Image (cartoon, rainbow, N blue to C red; front, top):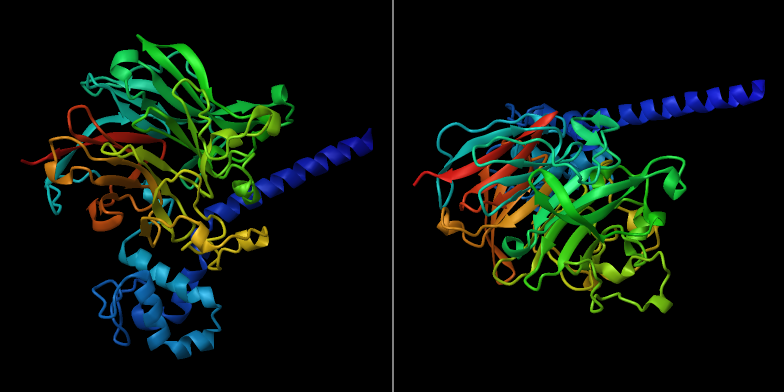
Length: 503
């Protein structure tokens, strides 16, 4: 018995040490960032630690004569400082990491922890086509993730660790809706973000909601002993139901996977964004809730966008569909629509065409807006514009033995470098901001910025920061009243905001 006690105590001590080491590693990552340390060691004596310049070197925060894109900064460093690069013995990717660091500082992108500080601008915000004000609709609860404006002016709200509620037309948030899937409490909060196993995720109305009343929700379904696991495991699942007063009724599971595919990876990367196309097909994003070698295995759900009928039936024209007698019963391949995604944190459909668009949160650098194609390979983790957080090239794809040509992948329509941590997006449609019609409104987490992107003929013709330092934007949606609604999170709670034109 004594040896058993020693083993248990030893395992507990090892577990506590491992958790403590992991917590320390995460919360100190910003302070140990290699390119920041390299800049302070080798560049700050001329350009200043704050990049504002000294008598030995110029201010890097003002307009740069050689250009200010990351690529132009890389060329400038190589052209004007070859001796410094050689003397410091930088590995090749460090030059790009330095360029990303300078670009991040120029764009005032805060650390992840500081991104939870929010400021609602007072007065008029000026932009290229419309000036506007930002109104606080209401403060909301813990971990806000998504909204869905209703035709009658109310707004559905999902909070990751609380559940579904309704905000009325006066801005009052009601009690949690009864009967929805369970939202589990957070395991921990690290750098302001929740680590959860069992989170509520997205909410989306059926395209014909006015007639049928169907509401779709994604959540991270959780099980443990009932699915043969010694610890909690989760996986994205899609359900639908209707509201009867404050009760969730007529509940149905629309999309799910075999419980063998549930994992212990926290729901931070679950994604779970929902959208419908013009033909009424539903789509759901699933992030990398597994090891990256599974992202290109069609029998697994991870790192993919899945397509289903509104009643949960599986379309036989899905690109990897197989008859039941040909496939593994636990396979999720029949609903796969596209693959090679890292973390698709946003999903929407073009109101003109029904095309599906997604945002992709890359590593350091390399955030993307993608047009989603049937059967498309989006390249992660073999191809990316980003670097690893240790200032090295991303080598995961090569390490895993992935082997396909770049020409076989679908490149992004819009690349964001440095990465603002893109979140959800929505096409503008309505009469309040007519000169934004059909533009993409794109939220971001770390950059706290609402972007407006105009795409014509597959090319970006305008890209504008509508507002910065707003807060961590989780969702952007068009209200039935024609106003733009923005959901932000900040530390323990969040806010629902409304953009209102000044004329």
